[in-house]
Length: 160
Image 1 (cartoon, one colour):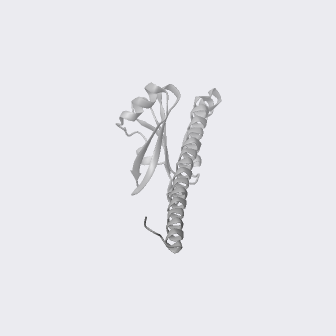
Image 2 (cartoon, helix red, strand yellow; image 1 turned 30 degrees about the horizontal axis):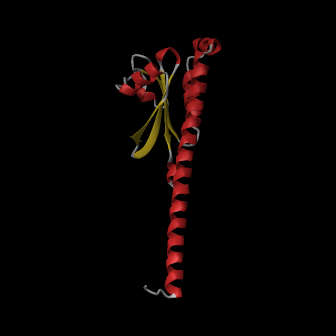
Image 3 (cartoon, one colour; image 1 turned 135 degrees about the vertical axis):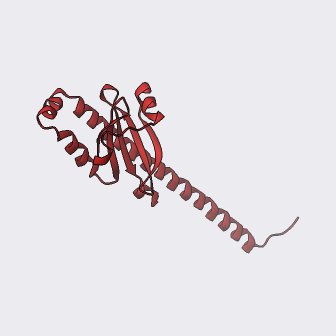
């Protein structure tokens, strides 16, 4: 039987304890980061629901007929929230109806996730690069087969 010194045994227990604590801390940080990402996605889903309900209301349609730029003001106002890269409303024919970028309005987007969101009635979340930054894009089924796109940064979460 091999004898170990008390120093070696204490050192081994200390090293194993440090490794276990390091693993647990890493696990908790990764878990917390995933929770923060999911919270950011849930927040943008609520924003998309608000946009959908707003543009579907009869009073909104009435106001739009009187004040044509009202929809533009809604999109631009919401895009000022921290971390929002863009907001788009895309018609069923894939034409951009409203956008935070004026030059996009009237152009078409060919993305299979539009049909997937409309057909399933469920939001689609995907990764995308926008202005050399990795962002998340939420494609939310909207009113009359429109989709609402919200691009948002996870910069604050990625710092962790």
